[in-house]
Image (cartoon, rainbow, N blue to C red):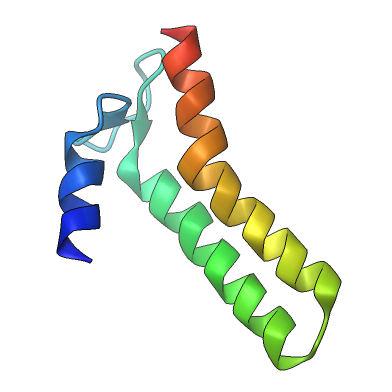
Length: 76
């Protein structure tokens, strides 16, 4: 877990200061919120046996970890 935090801290698209007013820079709090929400929704989907919720949670996790950083990297 600490290696993931280190990797995220070194990622060039993140703004460690927490402001998102620069173009192409997003605060790490945004990623953490979307990632955490995705995990919570996916877990809830597993608990109530809803494939739609599990898929939506996984999509949020994918978006926070792959899609958004890739788009930001392409825009810079």
